[in-house]
Amino acid sequence: MRGKAVVTGLGVAAPNGLGVEEYWRATLGGRTGIGRITRFDPTNYPARLAGEIEGFVAEDHLPGRLLPQTDRMTRIALVGADWAFADAGIAPGDLPEFDMGVITASSSGGFEFGQNELRALWSKGGQYVSAYQSFAWFYAVNSGQISIRNGMRGPSGVVVSDQAGGLDALAQARRQIRKGTSLVMTGAIDASLCPWGWVAQLAGGRLSTSDDPEHAYLPFDARARGHVPGEGGALLVLEDGEHAERRGARVHGEFAGYGSTFDPRPGSGRPPGLRKAIELALADAGLEPDGIDVVFADAAAVPELDRVEAEALAGVFGPRGVPVTAPKTMTGRLYSGAAPLDLAAAFLALRDQVIPPTVHTDPDASYDLDLVGPEPRPAALGTALVLARGHGGFNSAAVVRTATG
Image (tube, rainbow, N blue to C red; front, top):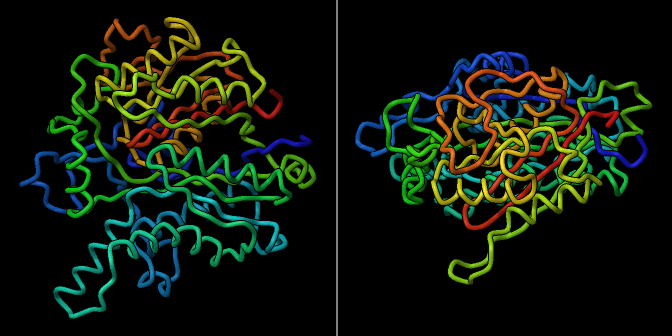
């Protein structure tokens, strides 16, 4: 295990399941968490569907003193961290406080906090907090609250690169482990299912306006019309391999390779950067393309972006050269929480030797993808590639493998 960064704990909060096993059963069963928004009235908006987490009651998990200090996403993140620690078999109080860090990602969640601040200003004469301060507070609060609650005083930070941020946070956590930190809580819980955040997402022009949950989010399909947003994600305990081995930890797998790029400006004539990110991740893991057993796609459901991803995969692996899946068709795109949730699904797929399904999509043959359909596909799995792209040109790729790989 020398020199390896391994995942020993998973904490999952997804629209189709709270907790690792509930999420995994729902995913293998093709159960969607996408439906009409209930957290506010979406009637007058052109997009009205989202992946919402159901059944989460913060009071069941957190002390009452924390509730006035936190918003919904922070509460879910705190509980997700508790679940990840429990899954790893770790009581944070038993470890040296400077040996544990927290590095997470965030993208859109600050909207809800900012909206609440503005509501207080308008209705109660509350103290004004700028939008910038609101976002900065939210970006810091998940890491800060997790570290304070668990007495973690090692390296801390928040990565902001939209949907790519979840993988970027894992990579930064691995860097800190290689520098000597024993353990880092990493990943992301994200969302902005509030009117202010919804308007901002609509302005991006990529939200599906379908009212049919089964036909709203259709990546790699000729009927693709944009994505459905969601809330949630996953937090992971990333640990130094030797430290995990010394304490006899169960290991889900290794975070083995990572690559990131940024797309050139439109009209430059230069190719998109996703393929290069994949190649960098493979090289970092010491693998050739034929060493990858399954790909968890970014799955934008925007035709030109789907085409870029399909061409990148065909360029690296050959046409239909590797099975591809997009379980996020059951949750929506969770922004910075999406890729950590895909990482969790990848580790579970490696554990159970099965590729989770992609629901509702009828793949366009011109993409030349071996897209796994609505049923799970048994397969011999030792490695997985997870892809994520952020709005504005961020591309990230990660390779995970079994601990013995």
